[in-house]
Length: 218
Image (cartoon, rainbow, N blue to C red; front, side, top):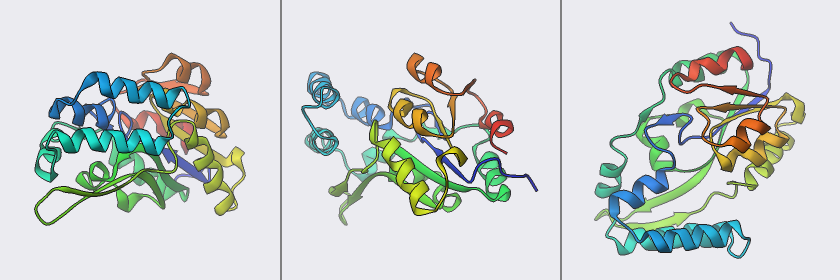
């Protein structure tokens, strides 16, 4: 049995646990051919602090709904996504080590459900969408923890479970993981797509196989 170096290890989803997407939202929008200018406007308003994360999230939902997105088309959109090589083996090894595991991600619960990942995690925070009996988008709720708020999420989890921040670790791949990388006891930039994250993280690990992070975690 491995010995845990950390008591709480949190993961991003898109590009970290799941491959063949940068952001699932981008994958959905491209599949449904939503208006790129409107998407960019919403992103810029959020990044400038003019919109809350909920406003950005609900704008995305509106665009997808207007484009006719439903349960079937969303499953089609994510059908090309696959688990990162070695993801399940990595999660199994961490679970055996005794560390708690969490998801802190701006991805969607339908992605985690597709790959059966929920059973590995003690805490899961990501965006929720639901469908009515005819497959139409009928409910949604944004995660409280994405982009800058991922840092708050990790801190809240550490307090809730009585874990010092120096005993926490985070694994992510992109610009929305920078804030949480700054506060984690140890941060891994895996499959990294952000220069800022690479500079912020304690170590950068090439993509392709998630098992490459294990020597740093257990």
